[in-house]
Image (cartoon, one colour):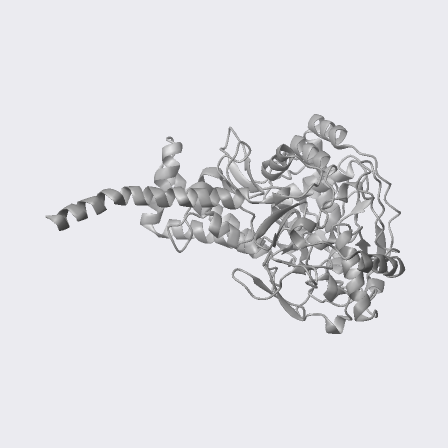
Length: 546
């Protein structure tokens, strides 16, 4: 009788125990996200959250699908934070701006006619996070460490596995049809097959032998393929996006005269709106390039682009967090400042972040002179595509030369973005007015391909270094190229407080970087590399303080 009573008491306690487990998991999740620390970078909580979850027109898959899909090899949800964190996304908890508690940069794009979509927004690629002694520190506008290609593959594999497994499909379809009562199983299957085929085609078009890994993407390559191949429906225009670059930090970007790693984009209006519209089209946006039409319908959220650009103008660089990372050595800083002025200042100018209307000039250094990997620049300069239905149209829709049967990929992309913006003229005008800020005019286009030397305040929070992410720490960058690490791992967010960069040893969910691969060279940028080691450490200390 005693054993039966004990068993009964145990069985009674099981639901309580399970509830406690769920409560603990919820509390742990909340504590984990709430423990995130934020540095003073010019944004309040509302601005940060709006930028993190506001759509600019990216449409990846239906929103309800993303919430209901299971991972290909388990019943765990695709949107599970552990899964997305392993892919490099920054997880957080639900709030009014993010009701489903999705990671930073996942935005809901509302469409009353076709249903809502999930997509990525600027913050997915331009929000960083560092860990210092177990503290999670958000870097607004910093370099993301997401694994872009693995994310795409995980969604494709989830779609395929759901279609192939009747039980998995049943669990998925029950959730979707419960929210869409006019949808049938057969229609849902057809929609999934269509999207899986489209996604497979997209991945095939952008196939490359150079693994991006975490924190990198050949943005120009993907943009060119999105327009010249997918929007124009010309398979012959496929060009492997084989020159991945790091996601650039965005503080001060709105204040520069030119942006992009190669300084190719002028930053006077309407330049920023064009650049952001192009980004929206590249990141799962849609546009219909129609023959004999001057403007093109698209999914771009032009109003939101104006708000996003306006708010990034207010962003400032993060200061070295002495309360978590330790005080800096004032003696080394003083000596390092003299070395900086001797070896660095000619290209990397000082920035006064307190000047809210600061105007900055980037220094453009010829690729041959800086000596860093030239593939990204070469691809940009030399990429020609067939124009298809655009032959005979003007480059800027209403102005410019007429396209022949071939053109530079950039010109085709610019034309398409212009057509999409002109399709919503009132929204475009309002966005330009809203985001307008005074900047220096871009210099006259240099016939010599160059890379941009940007101001490097906040450099401590923007590893890895060089445009292709080929050098893992500031100290390593000050070494002669032959002494820099040939291989390292990317994805660990723990900050190396000495060399300054992420800890680059192998860890869970890290990706391997091989500097011997095409486009991955760590050569060049030999400024200050002849310093004595003591001087290198002095310069590193000063760079922490910027």
